[in-house]
Length: 413
Image 1 (cartoon, helix red, strand yellow):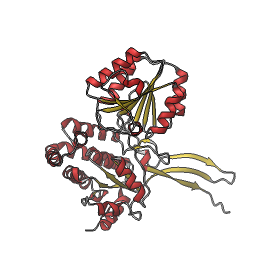
Image 2 (cartoon, rainbow, N blue to C red):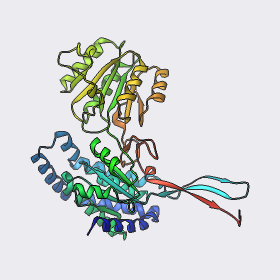
Image 3 (tube, rainbow, N blue to C red):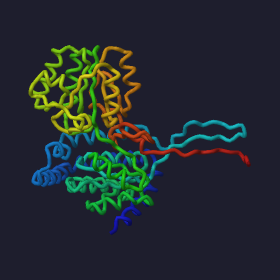
Image 4 (cartoon, rainbow, N blue to C red):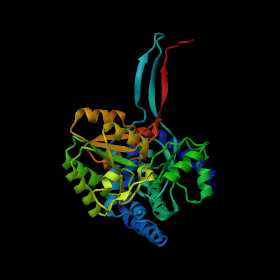
């Protein structure tokens, strides 16, 4: 069967789910959770097969970490499903009702996008996250993962389709694109007759390629060159723990810290301690000449380093003269994902939050919180760094649109 015919079947399935009640959609999600839990051994076997093949092909440790499933990660997926079940259903919500002078009542109703296309790499949790968010928001979904995680994704979709059948909904509501070729990906990106939106999630290369080639509207997710700025009025104990957490707790994710900016008046003993602690943890440091002078193991940073999303045990560091230089540097070099200021000065915090042009801007907290689950969404479809339609971690509402509804009593124009 061709990809076009597959897309037609997914489109047809969307009409059932977009008109499903909240109870029906939650019932599907409950069945998905139960089926995944009951078949976790099969999921882990397929994941192990993908992991072995990826290791044989020399995949990096960072990508292997993204691919890997275990009981703890499956538990987290199941917990996310329960959270999404508990969330209010956005579909059908009516807002901004007003009465015009001619007596017409006009308002907005939230509706599904209809068919969501996902093109993504490595992470099998995206397969489940995308499916459950699409179902709760009344959308069908076409999932096109990478060949590296093919067996895991296929098993996950097979099980979720089993749950759909149990609930008497079309299995094509969640559709798995088995063809992982570049030709199929190119065709997928141009199926605007069937896909209402396309969401790429993965490397900067994948996202850039999708944006350049797609004729389907793209809801762009972004890479994460995330910054932490240490102000001259920072609590340095907080700063140390925030940086270590944001950099080393999990390096392969887009919300990990990749760059640290330090005010010139920050205590030198703290800087020395921070550098030594990062080096002891195995983090390679690319720094400006001022900071390199603290330890000969630091490498001199290039312009490219300040733009880089390392996704590993590397970090760039720079001394700045003031808050304004820190904000300028972030707005120039970041990918506009997540940035943090560590400061006890409320005025400086307000300026940072106002002037830094990123999707998530923090004060005195780790960038690692930029995540749909942490934000209370249960799961996320991705983290948008663009400004149209949705920005930041995207949950249910990001997968909806609005239409105007107008109530009359015989008015004519």
